[in-house]
Amino acid sequence: MRSSGTWIPPRWPGCSAWARTATRDNARRTHAHPDSRRRALGQERAGRTPGRRPCRRRLPGHRAAAGRRDGRAHRPPSRAPAGGLGLRGRAGRPGRGAARARGAAALRAGRLPDPVAEQPARRQRPLAVPSRTRRLARGRACAAGHAAVRQQRSRPRRGADGRVEPALRRRGRAPASGAGRGLRAGGVGGGRPAAGVEGAGAVSGEDRNPANAENPDLNDETPWWLRECLRADEDSAAQARARQDQLTKPPGSLGRLEELAVRLAGLQRSQRPSLQRVWISVFAADHGVAAEGVSAFPQAVTGEMLRNFAGGGAAIAVLARSLGASLDVVNLGTVNDPGPIKGVHRAIVAASTANFCEAAAMTPAQLRAALAAGAASVRAARDAGAQLFVGGEMGIANTTAAAALASALLGCAPARLAGAGTGLDAAGIAHKIAVIERALALHADAGSDWERLRRLGGFEIAALAGAYIACAQAGVAVLVDGFIATVAALAAQRLNPGCGPWLLYAHRSHERGHAALLDALDAQPLLDLGLRLGEASGAAVAVPLLRLACELHAGMATFAQAGVSGANGSQSDPAAARA
Image (cartoon, rainbow, N blue to C red; front, side, top):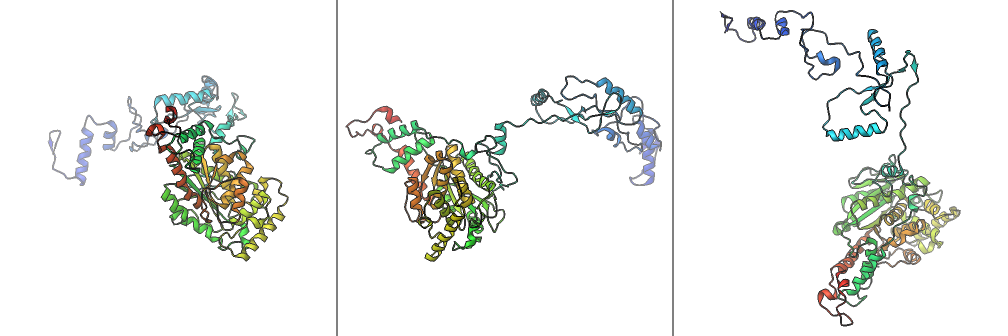
């Protein structure tokens, strides 16, 4: 190795001789930075090198000198504020001169000045946001009376004389508009919130926590379940009827299939209705009246069936797969809580209702929560584009609650409505009737249908009632299942009669009281197969029938299209054929 014309014996890295040689060479380099030469010679710089500022290395404030590692102390923190101080909401930057004066005095005293109210925010690295977006956001902030790039400091506010003045009041937050509250709260027309004291629900297995409850009746003095329902489109129904008369068949030869197609056309506001997207919601809950021994199965079955629903082993799960329908399982509260289950939405209202032989089954808040849980499922169905809503239920002792509620709503004797349920024998049915009679005597002073539902119903029955009302308000057709679902439909129509035209009845259940309910509602079920399972199974079986009615209505040719002569020897008019 050679340096400055003098031969130096070869050295190797690591030995002391090599280090001394490299240090001397570095000190002789004329192009090296002065700090490097000083460090090489064991010197310390007495002051800053004129004409050169140290590199900040993107370190904030007083940390700018931390990376030199040259033995010098870090630069002390800045004692000056980041800029002039201003008052919120005023144009320009008032008070800047006074702030400078106080700031200078404070700096001489070795402390930070007390801000008037706010100081400009420290400059930070820019975000990857388009400049136009930043300008718009800054403009909106200024228009609202805020300084767009200022941050509040938590120091006392002092006047020009140095005395502490009252703190500036924080700008009050304006109350949200009715529409805004509705969107956040997730009313019937909003998103799908968590369930709770006032509401329910999310999609895809998320918890519907009562702590995140919605209040769907905040926007109006009228509770959401009492608001007006939509009406079927008479023009669409008339056009569908005209098309039926032009199809290549004798008028009325397809019987009720024609009536179903015409009715669905009015509900869907379409000349050619379709039921390709079906939504099935099954609500599960336990009942306090199970303590009276009115069921052949233990109460633990409710929670266990939730896993069966999610696992695909229940009857409704098999039917939903076959139909290509969306299955929404909602846990409203079980005595033996199975915890979170994939595919089961938690909208826990309580572990179970109270024993209505001793007290009201639900509190007012619980009833509102159950109603809103049903409405939340309808919102999810509507967001998924569902064309038909099917509601089901699961709960040990819920036939007892349904029979008691129907007896109170219709004024019928319990013996006409109470049946075998899960398989009771004659003695079990007699005991069940006696329990219902005790409950009716206890709650004889219930003066409204709302009170009857609250005192004698169940969480899943109320959820079904809320779902039926919400469907009518959202314009989604409903296919009602068996006995318990029909009791919920009766309660829904008592709360809001406008929902009645949106309800189609799937089948006549084998449960004793279902025929009386259908007669009271003047309902004509589609099937009579002796079913009494619940879970929306009977309604799911009837879905293909509705689909076939729509397919026949849309797919059959008219007389004109097929070139077939009608009853009067003509091929009808072209306008009707194109409909």
